[in-house]
Amino acid sequence: MKCRKCGATAAINMRQHKLALCEEHFLEWMPEQTQRFVEKYRMFAPEDKILVAVSGGKDSLSLWDILHRLGYHADGLYIGLGIDGRRSSSEEGIGYSDESRRLSEKFAAERGLTLHVVEVEATYGATIPELAVISHRGRDKPCAVCGLNKRYIMNRAAHDGGYNVLATGHNLDDEVAVLMQNTLNWASGYLVRQAPVLEANRPGLARKVKPLCRFYEREMAAYAIVRGIEYIYDECPHAVGSTTLYYKEILNQLEEKRPGAKLQFYLSFLQAKEQGLFALQADDAELHACEKCGQPTSAPGECSFCRLWDKVRAVKGARLPLPALPTIEISD
Ligand code: Q46
Ligand code: ZN
Ligand code: ZN
Image 1 (cartoon, helix red, strand yellow):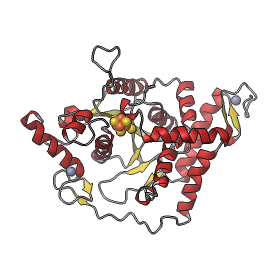
Image 2 (cartoon, rainbow, N blue to C red):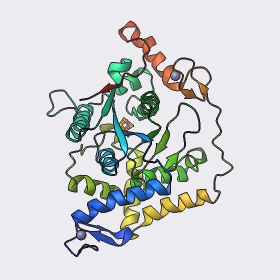
Image 3 (spheres, rainbow, N blue to C red):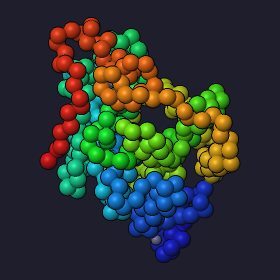
């Protein structure tokens, strides 16, 4: 297989685009395409201040790399969840969260970029797995409390740091797996909010963007490898057996038989929404400021983040620090 641009040996063949490229041209093509998506979906402009949520994985680090190459003002945010993943501390290596923080910091230091770090345990008094157990919201699967905490902290850090855009590294495979799950359930409330851009239509919320939403997962892996980005290969140990991974497998089987099926599913969905599907399902939940932390919430009184942590404090008592705002450190 030859590169379409220069005729050299191709490093990647993207069947859905009928496009094969060598390493050099693939590394050029990815930022070009990203810029095209940024403009097409009106994600952000050169004067915007962007906060990239980084996990140490291939997608978020590659996103940060691409935005940096494109010349955007993009800083990183790493949230330490306190997930170990080893069966015992005597097992070799370091835990999942420690390794992902190490790689995120290494990436930032090598490029002279600013990385903000919020450690959930140091800031609020418990790790995500502890929080899941104490709050009785997922002894085996802390994903629900994890998602709630990540959304809250990302939004809070963007707001407090003066960032008007929050970028995440969701790729096409992530988006299509969620789309399939929501479509099978006809979860219109979720479908109406699934988009490359979620506008900050209320004070206190940053605009959320997904610049990689049209890249396949294998393209992101190829980019990280060819670009020499060191990233954490393992998924979070709690992702094992998740419905998202199950749908990804099914969609990969579909893609194998019909190249381009995943991309077509996603783009047809976006087009259908543009043409008015779910238009009546307005996202008009009344929001007000949480009585404790001031973040926007639809819950009466305190937001669900504050209520969750109140519960933990009641159990762990005085050993926990007082309600605190996320302390944001900036690494060197
Ligand atoms: S990090 Fe958190 Fe995910 Fe791990 S605990 Fe679940 S939600 S799987 S993206
Ligand atoms: Zn080439
Ligand atoms: Zn609150």
